[in-house]
Each structure stands twice: as C-alpha cells, then as structure tokens.
Amino acid sequence: MSDIIHLLPDSVANQIAAGEVIQRPASVIKELVENAIDAEAQNIHVLVTDAGKTCIQVIDDGKGMSETDARLSFERHATSKIREASDLFALRTMGFRGEALASIAAVAQVELKTRPESEELGTKIIIAGSKVESQEAVSCPKGSNFSIKNLFFNIPARRKFLKANSTELSNILAEFERIALVHPEVAFSLYSNDSELFNLPACHLRQRILSVFGKKLNQQLLSVEVNTTMVKVSGYVAKPETARKKGAHQYFFVNGRYMRHPYFHKAVMDAYEQLIPAGEQISYFIYFEVDPANIDVNIHPTKTEIKFENEQAIWQILSASIKESLGKFNAVPSIDFDTEDMPDIPAFEQNLPPAPPKVHFNSDFNPFKPSSSSGGGNYSRPKVDWEDLYGGLEKASKMNQPFSDSDPESEEFAVIEEESIATAAPETLYAGEPAVIEKGTQHLQFKGRFILTSVKSGLMLIDQHRAHIRVLFDRYRAQIQQKQGFSQGVLFPEILQLPASEAAVLQSIMDDLSAVGFDLSDLGGGSYAINGVPSGIDGLNPVDLVRSMLHTAMEKGNDVKEEIQDILALTLARAAAIVYGQVLSNEEMVSLVDNLFACPSPNYTPDGRVVLTTIKEEEIDKLFR
Image (cartoon, rainbow, N blue to C red; front, side, top):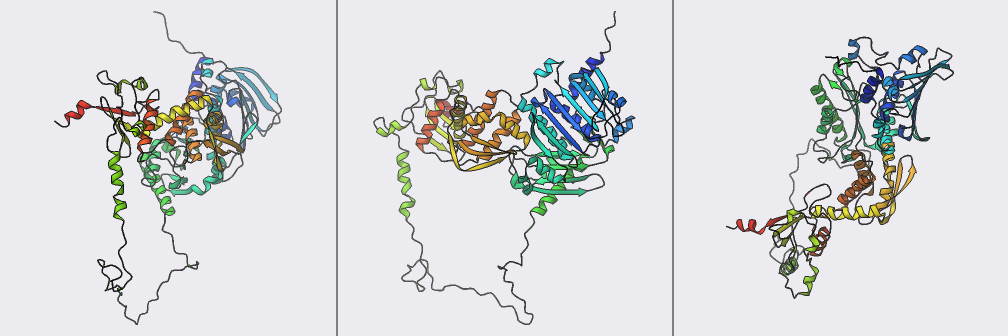
C-alpha cells in the first residue's frame, strides 16, 4: 500500500493559517495597527480604498525594523515577543504569535518600507502570495509603512464572499474604534477613499471616548474605579435613563486588549437590575488590569475571547463597583443653604416646655345639610351630575344591538366575501368553509388587544397590534419599492449624531430612507438633520426611529437591497402600529379588518407571528355542555 499522508506546501499552509487570522479587510488593519502600537508608535495613519478591497495602508512612526528583521517578519511563527512557552503567560503586547504578516502576505500583494532610527537607509520588500519579489535599500522615514493591495487576489472564492463596501467599511471602523479607545496616548487618523473619517489626537481616556462617539456622551457617563489585589477595574458606565433597545456602546478591555465576555456583561446588567426596562441595553467602557499569568489570551485566533482564572470573583467586584457608582449618582440631594428659599428651622429653647399640637376644625359642619342651613355657611357638598355619569350606558346599549339588513347604517360594517379572502391560509378554513365574516357583524374589542368578530365557522380573534403591523408593512414596502413615500416636513429639524462606524452604514441605506419619506441632510462630522419624516408616524421620535432602523440593518448585516428595504419597512411598521391598550371605535376596527384581509398574507406578521386565529363553533358548544 502506497503512502497517502504528505506535508502541505508552505503556500497552502499559509493560506489555511490566513483563513483563521485574516477574515476580512478589518482583520488586516487590526493586526497591522496592533503591531505599530507594539513598536511604540505615537502617530498611526490608516488609509483604505474601496473598504480595503483595493488597498490598505498603515503608516507609523515606531521603532521600525532592520533589513534582516523586515525579511524574517513575514515568516510563520517569527516573533520578537516570546522566546519560550512560559512567555505566553506573561504577555503585555498585542501581537505575539508571528502569524499576522505571514498570513497577510499569503493572500495579498504586500509592500513594506521600514527604517529604524539608528539607520540612514531603510528596507523595501515586495511580497505577493508568500513569494518575495524584490528587496532593496530605500530612503524612507523612521517607522514602518505597510501597503496591502488586492486582498484575496489569489483566492477568488474568499474574495467573492466579502460583503458590500459599506459593510466592510463599518467593520473596519469598529476595529479601529476598539484600538483607539484603549490607547488614548496614541494619535490616530483614518481615511477612506481620501476622505477623513477620524483624526484623533493623543488625549485622556474620557476625551478619547467623546472624540469617537460624540460630545453628547459626556453628560451620560459615570466613572467606575476600584482597585483590589486581584483586579483593577476602571472606566465609565452610562446613566440609567440613557438605556436603549439597540445601539448601546459596550466595550470590555483587559490589559490594553479588546475582548468579548458575555459573563461579565451579565454582571454589568445585574447592577442595573430594576433601574432600566427589561430588554434594554446600557453603554459602558470597562477596563480591567490583571496579572497576565491569570488570563489566557491564546484561546482564539483573533484573541477576542479571553479566559480568566477567577471569573466569579471578578464578576462580583465588577458588579459591586458599578452599583457603587450608581449609588453615588442617585445620592439624596443635600439642602442648599445659599438659596433665598431657605427652609424655616425653628430654634430650640431649652427653658420652655414643648407646646402640644393644636387641632382646628369646624364644629358646625354637617355634610348632610345644604350650605344655606349650615352654621359655617362655607361648606357644601359638590354637586354631581349623575345623569352625565350614566349617560354613556344608553349609547353603549344601542351599539350592542344587532343591526338588521334594512338598517342603512349597517352598510358601514365590513362584509368580507369569499373572493376577498381567497388567499387566506389554511388555518382559517374549517370543513372546507372559508372564514367569512358574516354580514352585519359588529366587531368587539377585548382587553384593548384583540378584535373579536363572528365568522361562519365560529369566532375569530385578531391581534390588533400585529394586524396593523401586517397592514403597514405592506404599505411601506410598496412605497419604498415605488419610491412614493410621502414626506412630512418638521417645524424644527431634529439632529442625529452618529459615530463614524454607524454613519458609514447610514450612507448605504440613505436612498431607501428617502424612498419611504425621510428627508436627511448631512451636516458633516457624523451629524445629520432630519428635515422630514414619513406621513402617518405622528408622535414618534424621528431620531430614535432612524437610529433603530440603522442598528437593525447593522445587526442583520444584509447587503441585498431588498432585504434592507424589508428591515426599514418592518421597523417603521412596528413603530407606527396601534399599541396594545388603545381603544378603537367600531369604524376603526372595520377599517383595520378590511385592510388586513386585503393583504396577501393576513395570517402572519412579516416576522412570522400569528395575527389571527379562529375558535370553531363546535369547540364553543363543548364549553356549555
């Protein structure tokens, strides 16, 4: 039998390793910027073209590399950070495995110019697909200049699965923000297609957070600070009233490294228990400092998942520190003695006995006598018009009376023929008989949530909120497709402030927002003015509505325009739909039911929830046997 196991060529092995480390353009920027920080750079510039698909350039003023180091840096597992296995448990640098540059060179065309401060000439290396094409001496400034072109040029399948430019740019900005937030002492800049998106000078941590996410956040942050022998926790959490359902800025960092940690996230939310509504999120920026020997950062290729040795104890410390900060924020206000309206505090005289309290009452008051016969003459029972109190009963009794076929007002009520519900789902059909609303049937609202109506097969229950979502979704979806959304101007434009990562996604869905009726103008610096909103959404906050649609699109990660349109239509329909508890007149119920059965799919909401159900007459009869 011939041997079938063989060693992979280096080029194939490098491409497999690149698949773990380099997933998209944002991964390249993360690795290169982290290497620049390890090289003690004070200024880092990032330039991307076509969201990194065409070119990524990272320039730093760090220590640079010699000619030999520059060549070795592209070899697998070549690193200056560790010498032996024990060094893995004392790491204080970002990159350490020596996989980043080798993985990037395996799937892209790389050009490096680097020079250490002690040398007069630098080194220029060009590598494509792990093959060194040239190496020469060149004049260049101190530091390193990486140019990564045509990412995944030799792996067409990987390049094909890259997302749209707006999505990839959003991922780049998210990685960039994570690094910038943990290194406020370093100046960063980011350009996309020659347009400046970030220009962050070196500053303090709080100022860096405001520079990235906007100055409005300054009034929302509470500082967190606790120092124990096990861990040091610092950073900021937001006030409870700033909680939102989507779009909260939530960041954990440990020893200068971004991490995801669902367990510690629960600790933060536990501190806010009963302070914010269920299902809402709060912003936080939490920084941990622990002994590197007590954590393991090498359990995930991207090093975003970190294992702690004492997770439960740190959980309690984190939760307690946040509760302490919230307690200081909710402290009982003290009396300000500098104000003119100072409370009158009586002085205590030691020689005088305390006076008993006096009770004042009118002994002549009789509630059963009119005011003219009472001794005081000032007291009388308020006159109550009992006829007005019971006046609505007569009207209600008339509304509950069945309408005859000869009653001209009965024409106002819906009569849904078989043809109008031919598209109804099988759930509304029983014994071959369609769920036809009987002629002259009056609708009844139950518990402010359900609409009850009689059908030939029994009793139909319709969820009013979901039914309205179904109706509005189809309406908004048609408006977006036909670009016929009606915009209603606002008297005072609302200002929407977004970080760069969210502003990039907003640009990609701007046409769809305009199609549904939003009128937004770019004010620069991540600020947008909402000049008009779709008609029919009165009473809704347009800023929250746009932000909700934006975050939904970001979470779904959809690149297909039709899917984004569905997201916008569904978000808008949910926001504008009839709420539970809203009392509806019979005419409103008739209109809602008519519009519901005019929809192609009246039985389910766009996200698959049941809108209506029918209780068969036989089942009702069984209840009375």
